[in-house]
Image (cartoon, rainbow, N blue to C red; front, side):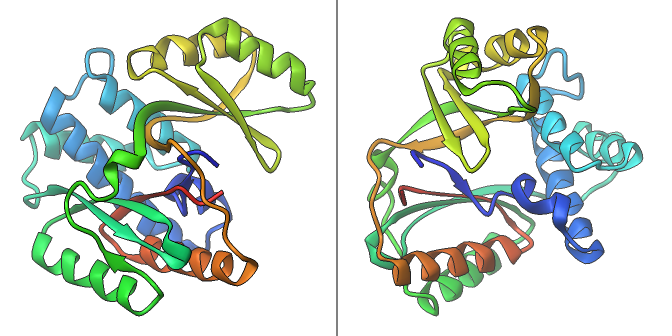
Length: 238
């Protein structure tokens, strides 16, 4: 998939055991706090916060957790000092990776991510070595719910989508960054079920891996996602 976010928290949490669900809530809490700190606690005036809250809803994050995270971001509650981090790397078969996270200790997180990569057929890359292979896009996951593929695709294009991709049974709509909210609202108004909207890195070109390399990559994504600080993993793996 062009820029699919592998092992993304929201992608798997619905099937998670309680321990992993708690870890997912913690990750979303950090993302909410950062978004509120950067743009304020009102989602109607802070599009980044609104997008994160939409994602948090898909995993049934408790309302009190959300409110506490927002208050930490706005300074109404004391909280840990958080920092956004983003690493560039290469994985099995030479695939390009962008690994995003939120941490309270950037040196520790860098070391942990480097170790996971080194032990799983990957390696850190220098700044700019990988990011040029991706574009920043809006991404909306639409659940078909019995609707015909052609109908969904036409609705997405009519709503202003740049591109449409299918992953398993779900449709992912890509938009310009500034069009994300308008396209999401248009699809919802037409009665389509949205399962998440976010800003993602979309690969300009995809790389085909052997089955063995693909298995190695999936294992790497899972181990990275298990790290408390990692929030998203993007690759150009087809």
